[in-house]
Length: 329
Ligand SMILES: Cc1cc2nc3c(=O)[nH]c(=O)nc-3n(C[C@H](O)[C@H](O)[C@H](O)COP(=O)(O)O)c2cc1C
Image 1 (cartoon, helix red, strand yellow):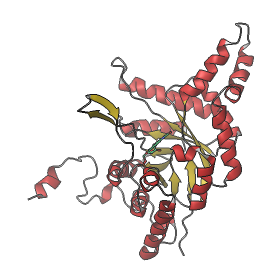
Image 2 (image 1 turned 180 degrees about the horizontal axis):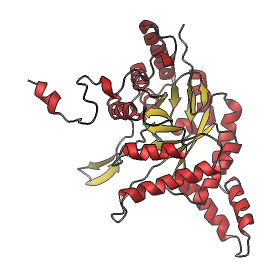
Image 3 (image 1 turned 120 degrees about the vertical axis):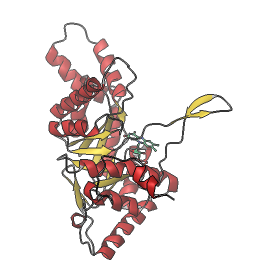
Image 4 (image 1 turned 90 degrees about the vertical axis):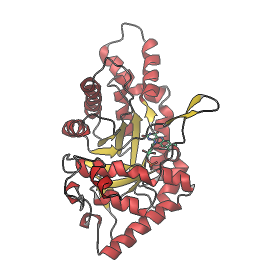
């Protein structure tokens, strides 16, 4: 009998499979079904910083100029509960009542502004942790990389000041130096990093001559980049690592754990299969593989493979085609 228990962000999980932020995780009934299907934890669908900020702006506009700073702060903190963004908290509270598994709230955010007070509300209604989806498409040619990253770090710092909950960040792979940014965020005290966020994909309809957002579901081949970065990051940051993107079956989860991830997130597989049974299948596959390999618990093999184990022993520094291509007849 194998033991699938693990920990993530300081939380005890009955297994290392987590449903990532998506519409299924915005509905309390679905989350209850996900728990029944055996999932280890759920990340709730993101609320957007703009949704929270809009509420703050509405409230501030209704206050007269003599309102004291302390009163403003009080009102801001209470704001989201009174004006919109409230339903997010209600939904979270409903989920909290229905399920025992850890619940991670999620905010899609860019700036350290007064929305960060909302983190306290999220904590009060029973989230176990908060994931910051640092979704940002830098389109200002005058803003250089260090400035873009500095703003993200300021945001993380501001949120960490607001809450006692463990905070994780969901990253995109598009950093000039992902390692440097990840280490800076780690030093601030984030408890986890999610590799990676998935942007809406752009496509073009050549008949209509229109741009559109292509289907958002991943395939198992999406996993490669996450595996590489999990292997690179895992000994260079103190915080936990979650692999998100391309886990569709048990072997995807095993790969993520072998390269050092603490958990694997699953999302597209639920949609592609249109069935939560995939959760049981992934966990049964993991348990069966562990049994075959003689592993009793996750720590027996988690992180067993790293950069040094690449076949040619050269690490990830040069991930070009040269060697592989040279071997192709
Ligand atoms: C329909 C849909 C909605 C999503 N909504 C969110 C969201 O609100 N916040 C977020 O951080 N990620 C969101 N994601 C991204 C997923 O959480 C996940 O990171 C991504 O799909 C990669 O994992 P996968 O390959 O298992 O799908 C969404 C994905 C899909 C398919």
